[in-house]
Length: 603
Image (cartoon, rainbow, N blue to C red; front, top):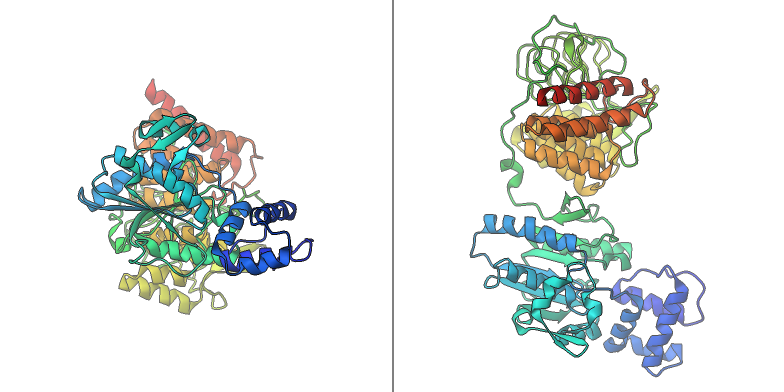
């Protein structure tokens, strides 16, 4: 419904535009009123009631009005970061995956006067795709499409920092620049109203696309239209195809199953590759933790380290000040029910004994380790939590006894916890001052059954990774990590589709990748988490670990120093967000020991 105060008849004009083109009510009604009046003047019409009737059947009038109500701001290679990413990342990946003879199909979904699709075509030609490319370009304004067809531009279209890339394809005639036919012939212009259910289709050519630019247009749509457009954009992409949106456009993760791709400049989207869920991950290769002096841990007596230490394994950080988007207030607890004994570590939980672990925390034997949290005695840790005794810790919460926990939730004593019957998948339950993530026995069995079938998608859904609440999704992924870390990685991607700007998911993804010795991917995820939340101390600490493993000593030392600095800004007893109950003072000491050790090594 259009609100606000407008002269009689003008409100109905905006309502018609919303119905026909899906445009949301403008935030500035005064500017919209002026735009309508200019369009009426061009139509030689001063009676708004007559103008409204003519709009309802005259597409040319509606197109002209849409030009007034939307901003046709564009120039060659606008937002050059998008084109750089297309050139450096997307095109090489497509060529490697599809082969040199693949016909690349690109679409500029709101091309305006043509600068965007012609920029795409010029870039593809420069990168050697000239004989294997087609670029579609559509717009809702026929007036704009006419300008694109003429391809006659002024200096205003060359004002961007990367516009010089276009000059070889332009011929100056007076104050105008005419585009060469070499570029024009690769671009097919056509009318399309994105708000209508007329696409995608093979007939229109908007089908199985490798690259789509739909930038700075979604901001004009109402929520229902955004949802429909997002769904159709996903359907128009080929498996592995990329979607570039504008920096002001709304996130699309809630509307279609895109895979968000975080970069140093923002977010783009990808349609996941078919069948990649099962084949993408490498076998688990946990890394052994190191002490602050660089020596590996040796087997110690059971319970020698942190048995009973308050908060040692808690996922929530009560009393801490979570950064925006993180708010780690849920506690995950999972226990696969593995028998206590010398099984290899299969997750990110730290180990105080001699088994390998990819955790981040202080570790058994009392010496600070290269990780974030303590663990119990000499048995392997198979979860994300801390163990207080000699048996494997299989939950996220801090078990207080020596037996393995066998349910989802925290166990407080020596008996196994079989899950909280009152709990439900993806739901937080409150117990005292702690908020815990629990699954019912039925949900836990459903998760395990899905994992046994190799159905990671169903396991992620049953665990709650698709929760609309980012805290619930994060806790569900952590819980799933104790059952199958590879499935948890998939669940991370599923959760990130709905919550692409939640740094905690990327941080957890980096932890899981580190547990698989996928150092390059772990570094990427850690940097993405820090892009979203630069003040995430554990993110800098994790990045330091990953860089050190890649023999990037100087960069690792910088990351450790940044982690220390962030922790020193807090009270020594303050709980650090996403640090599994670790105190700021202890983490600062760990980070300091790490960068000092690296400096000694360099000398």
